[in-house]
Image 1: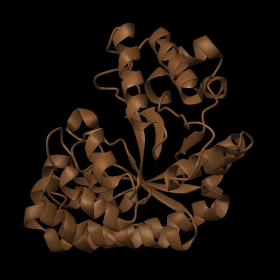
Image 2: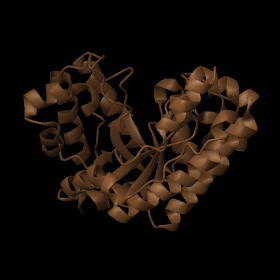
Image 3: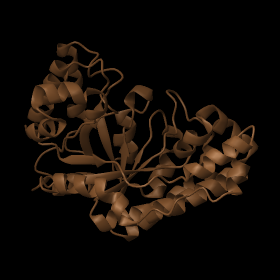
Image 4: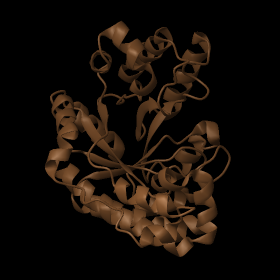
Amino acid sequence: MNSTERVRNAILGKPVDRQPIYGWVSANLSGEITAAYGSVGAFEDHYEFDMAHLFGGPSAFRWDAIARLRAENDELTPDLLLEEDIFTFPGPFDVYQDILHALRHHKARARFCYIQTPGFFEQFNDLFGIENQLLYLAMYPDELNELYRRQAEWTVRFADHCIDLGVDMIHISDDWGAQKNLLFSPRLWREIIYPHMKRVVDHVHSRGVLCSLHSDGCIDKVTDGIAELGLDCVHPWQERAGMSYDLYLEKYADKFAILGGVCVQSAIGILPRNALEAEIRRVFGKLKGKRWICCTTHFVQNHCSIEDLTFAYDLIYRLARE
């Protein structure tokens, strides 16, 4: 069984020869990993990572149009964005060369490749800022609903290009949670996020490809909705934010897989090694054999030493094969 088969089977709840492993290790520790292993790619090869998280392709926004709107108005509000064609067309293929290069590298190692694409609330935080957008959800719900619809149409076209290139899963990044609750009401989520997410998920599935979600924080008030969306995998299922593994195993393990388990907030780079080992073993004890890919809950932070990172992945490598 190669890595693509292993990850796909784990996501779908089918038998695997061992637990798949991965980690978001590069963003803050690339220099340290390169000094110790020669490159981030060498680290990934050393621990036989089963997945690759790809980024790249075109921006969704016409930043020249947005800059002009900012210059002409005291405040950039959702209604103004509806007066301008702010979305790009996600092509031609020459802007996908970074994705194609990454696919060639990882598919030579038979890895399961998933590509990140922006969601809705998270995407427009780049334009408005999170505090303003939370305010606009109350002030401009209809306008934001229309902007999210247009974003969904862009995402469908972007996903088509990526699927044609050979990605295995479309990964929608759309942070909805704070540490103890949703950032907005479940009713609002159902009304102006769910329909557009459903549009994307259904289209991706129509192309025979899996679809996953990244959302930090506590999202337990919409997990029934996540199951209804038909999403195949959720990252990170953040235990630290009150998303217990018992809840997942009791209610959702037959609905979707989870990617995560190694907490960057409370475990790796924070705990002494004996406690870190106990924590990793605890998570494997709960999730091994389930619809789970062992991964960090987010990018490993720069307070994690290369020695601690190596210690953690030496252990993960062994436990996945026991």
